[in-house]
Picture 1 (cartoon, rainbow, N blue to C red):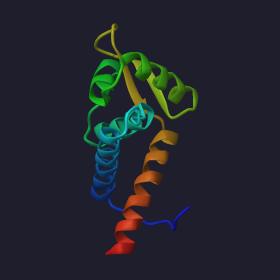
Picture 2: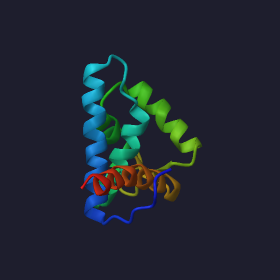
Picture 3: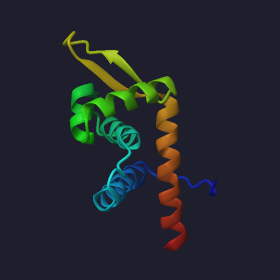
Picture 4: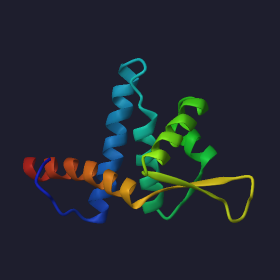
Length: 122
């Protein structure tokens, strides 16, 4: 694990956006290279930082890929304690998805690696 680097909120958000762009570039060149699970937690993190919450359907659409695969990944991420699904307060048919503190810490850790590389290479 790299040295701890304290980063500001803006740098953290930009690092997560960078990670998503890197993953999209890689997936465009490699068949079946898209890992929906990582994209799901990155998207949840970004939307939460922007003050938004997502229902399951919105998250799946934004992440792309098949709904079946995404739902399986959501179940695994929830079992791992990285996210939670909660009933929507305004619409009983919908389920909202949020990162748990553990899931948020994981994303911050990954984004911190990007920020550390930027600081080291600056």
